[in-house]
Amino acid sequence: MTSYTFADPRLATLDGFRVELDAARERADLVLDRPPLNVITMPQRDQIRLVFEALDEDDRVRVIVLRAIGEHFSSGGNIKGFLEASPETVSKLAWNMAAPARCSKPVIAANRGFCFGVGFEISLACDFRLVSETAQYALPEQKLGQIPGSGGSARLQKMVGITRTKDIVMRSRRIPARQAYEWGVATECVPDDKLEAATDALVDELRAFSPLAQRTAKKLLNDTEDSTLSIAIELEGHCYSRLRNSDDFREGVEAFHSKRAAKFRGS
Image 1: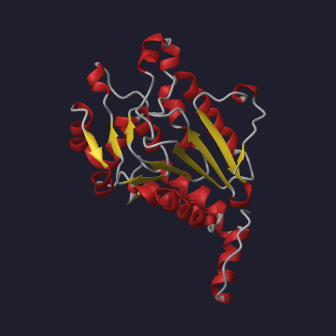
Image 2 (image 1 turned 180 degrees about the horizontal axis):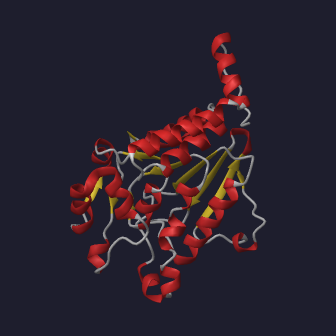
């Protein structure tokens, strides 16, 4: 992997993280790098949003991985920063941390150790959460006299329901990796020393699909999360119809009948 270079001057010096590019594997990694706990600062949140927006526009990147250095993904935000930040800054917290969800490309979060507060919230905004058996998820804001402010309680409730979300949020409960997997919060739970291999495998799996079909599927699923069943089915039909005329769909059908691997181009 090589260090990623941004044209945006606001990303000339990254605060507490780095970005790496593996062009051969069409992969970009956003790596939290403020060990031992990878605390996420207020300025860092703005930069993370900008990075996702830049990677979304980069044709060299098919899949984005969000991971961290060390034994903990992130213990959460910089606590003093909340009191120092202006109301305007605080109002952008959820928007910034929703950047993985807005990104049209698949985003994988690789979580181990502590994944608390904003660390959990940005992971919830990703499409896939791979967890090692050491991982613990938590939204501990009640201990500070606060509530989650970056979309955590809202996203979690969609995944596990109001009863479990109240248990996690109102009691600041830690959820171990295996339980997170059983509840449908985590995509896959693996031994700690297999997390990188599982991430690599998922990247390669996702790259084998049509990028056009993947972007369409992600947007459709995100857009219909809150819709009625009839509207979701209607929108699914429209998306299917648009893909019907794509080069990738034709290639997929021809490859199927020829019993060969498809070579998708994203058009």
